[in-house]
Image 1 (tube, rainbow, N blue to C red):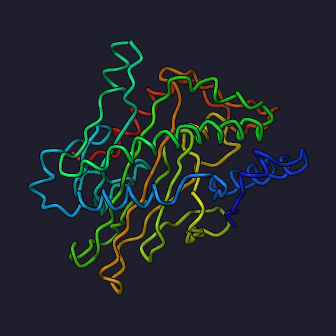
Image 2 (image 1 turned 180 degrees about the vertical axis):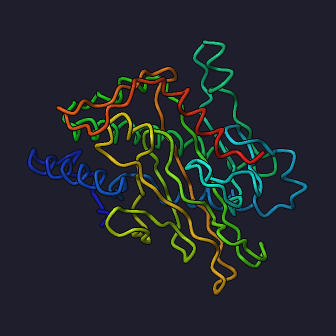
Length: 318
């Protein structure tokens, strides 16, 4: 069971109401690594506007999109066949059935080597000039919400609200607009091919704004195996990634998930998801939460972004 948690009591409630939110978050992340949040304050019209402008780009002929093509981890258009997320688990499989426009952190730190790898300028499609102001507003909202959620997670660990946020002064992040084309546009689907193959995310938290669909999100739990993720149009879907799981010594599970293939019996279904990936400051030394504080696995300390680069490289299709 993935709960829907209202953030308003966390912001404005009594001490008892805040404690109830903290307990619910801890339980959900122990069980599946997923939860849904309402009361987040992100305008539905903003999300709809991004989808409308992005759809204009994705519906362009491939020749118009090709000049923007990039590899995984770069800024621009990830075309058909660019990713196979199952490779992150070491499972070879067909490429994912999606296209993406990928944005990432772009405010330089002044450290040349760090900026060259993690803080390069973003690309913007000239054919859709209205996309940029909407994305920039959305990124600002996601940035603020990420730190709020990380403060809540720090309290849920019993470590205080700045346990994670003291490492997010100048963090890396990624924002993907994922387009899942309809079956009628794709044709035949290979055996074992998904819109996104089974994987866990790589960073601290992911904030997902998704659309309801037959070929939608599934979450894996220890008790129930693969299950359709609950949908609430007002909610954002939150999951933690591998970096956070290791940081908590596996107290919390990295949320394993996949996106189903486009349904054969609804050949016109196309979906667009807005996927925000949040991390931490480059070079953060990550040490697992000790057993006496609730951790279960003592990982050797590691550099956050050496770890993240290895994960990004793993899913790129050459």
